[in-house]
Length: 81
Image 1: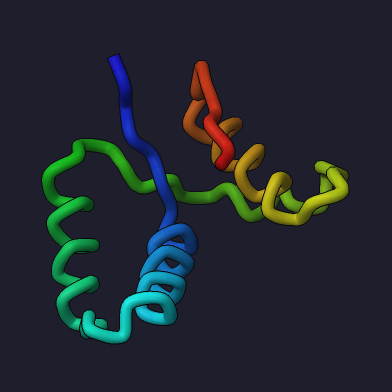
Image 2: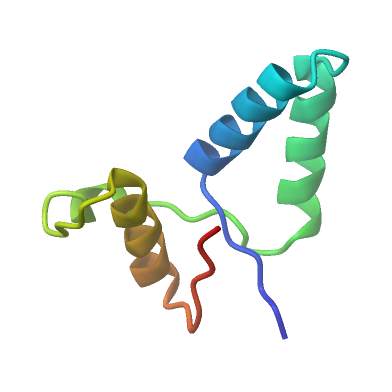
């Protein structure tokens, strides 16, 4: 079974990148998608992970953020792209 988890920071990142790559889309459309994702996937938002940022040293800052989210959600798997 797969259980999706993300943060508001992840939402901001995908929305920003999608708007950059797809000028035909509007931010309000993507905010609506964000709202639906949060409503439909139970317990999807990860909170209170920021304090771990200081204690984890990895070469890529994005890897650090993903690792923090993983710890906070007690995840079994992390998929990086």
